Length: 343
Image (tube, rainbow, N blue to C red):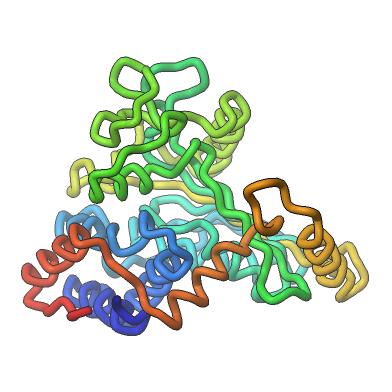
């Protein structure tokens, strides 16, 4: 088991070694470690070698000049200069929070890259007492409903809100049956996957992670419809490539991916009496927790309960890294003349 601080320090050292400034390295490390602390390893350390490869290949700019291209009273368009997606997204969400002083703030970002877990940025708003929204384009890894090959991304949506409870409300889901990161983790562990997760090259459902070629939409046509709409927002508002026109995440490391994102922040007190939204949300949470659980369940949960419970456990007990991922990280460390910590 590794402590959160030890792994955070390793990420920072790794990114510094490829010329990422300290502040940006710390931002990226915080996002990656939030994924690990929440128990979402598909968006955590498993991605670090990819970022290093793309920085060294020239498709991710380690020192981007992030700019605001266009700004209105409550909107803005950000150009990320092909920087690390975590850095671009943090900049964009901070801008959305700033704009929300007028009630709401919406920011689209272009020329970006993979930004990790969408929920991180929505939580930025929730921790400022606002409702947060984050969307992003993803590789064309999901087959449209009725299709047999990938076209859309598994385009996630994350919503977060403040409450009087012990933690913010957080919904962070992909519009596919699962995120592609879960297929990657299953492959690294040599595990089978659930039949409803993916299809093979012939368009048939598969339980073999190695044969998975496209994810299936969440709730069939419903997940497909959401993914389609989110694709429109993240590409249509930014001019970013869509669907199969996107450079694949693990494709040519010399070509920028030019991803588009979309963020929102809403001040509850623009609608409700100050404090009422948080109180009402707290009451809603408390009453849902008291609903009689169905057979096989111990308690009805609200969005975010599992993640924050796992975060508490990770912070106290440490984080386990799969042997295959640890070996990958040791390889990256060796390339950069660094040392991977001992567990």
